[in-house]
Image 1 (cartoon, each protein chain N blue to C red):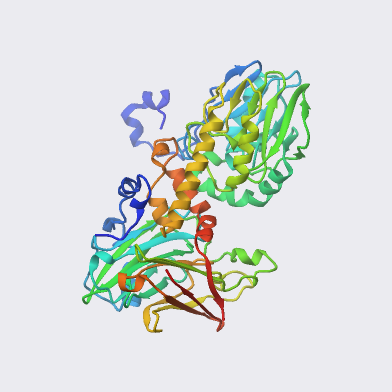
Image 2: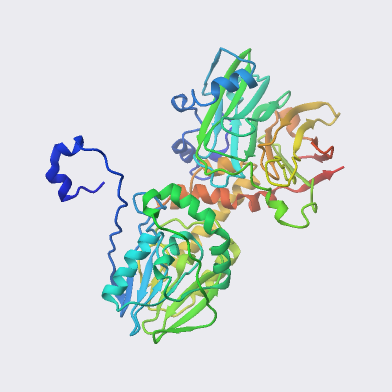
Length: 313
Length: 253
């Protein structure tokens, strides 16, 4: 807990006062410009937890004459409101927002942008509508007061082809693999790739809705793009292609580990307990992310390892 | 001595140690419904203890409340007459009763989780009960949600399909049956679940038997451990459910 000046002044006597309801903590934004008019709010390299308020994914704002184009809106309403305040105060308001995919750390702040168009792929909007309640229940439980005021608002505009928002041209790529609908963007002015969670760097990828084969295909597309810099969904901005290489290596190693476990007759909880591939064991969010992934992805590997030998008689 | 196979994966032995090795932490488990379930489900034994010879591997939280993977390995205890799996705060606290017979006392399975709390495997050996358990955090809903298969109009397609494989080098046997395992708690869906499964040898004599109750996961996959004399197969597998359906298959090494 952060100590305020008031608490310091009250000193030891504060311990005798009635304990007030704990106020929701504040989001501290630390944006920096990584390219011309491209502002990056880097997420905590961790799982969603009370220590980070769910502010774990990267958020990007692109400046335009009509205000900021906000790519992903934060993990809670209050996170979204803090981002909105920055856009209003520093970037001349908000032209539009986008959601790269339906995982809650990327769009539960939509409520703070409800007066502006919020773009997402059709598959993302459908998944937002279907999953909002369950995701919200889970996050209220994990995040507590950080979630105050969060009523998930699905995106309102279906993204199709390329966009020109506030006069800023964006190449829109409708991909999949991390989820059933993953939007990646290239900012025309700077050549910056905003990859959403198709790319992770130095943080274990998450798999709750992953299709590993489709994800590999998306990575091969992203790897061939002539871009000047890359913002992964989680991890630092970088100018080479290492997030593509690392994410692909992680997918391959994870799939090989699941396959080895299933074909040797291990149970899923043994695969889980064995922990991540040693090369990735020290990565941020591991072993927790690996353990989740082992449960999420196990069934497909298991079925291919067990032949049909009988049935109903 | 344990029959856990984490070491088959690179770094898996260290991973298992970091995971806690499946050892029971009694400080969190001599509580909850344990007194009551010992009385109601185990015949009220006064004498019980935990023992490193019984390891229970379970995730710390239920990532998917409909499929929580568990492994109970009592091979460190010697001969086990039966092993009873209970879940403290489940609407159906009795999950499984395993009679290892001529198999080894190891059982892998998945359960549905309705609410956070302990799961326990209690093994009766030499007249004494050994309890291994773990606390599993869960958001819940595993027992009261409809089986995923009912979201499809063709859920009967593939119903009862049996998959299995025998690994003679380790003695592992894994068996899966396509079954909705309906608990009766989901709106408009009556109870319909497996009730028992039996393993038999080449002569048709029983190897081991499992009594099955509502918490077992949809499309369950079970893991057994056979001694070298039986691990070459063939092994017959038969099962029944509450609607009188019978399932059968045979697996060879």
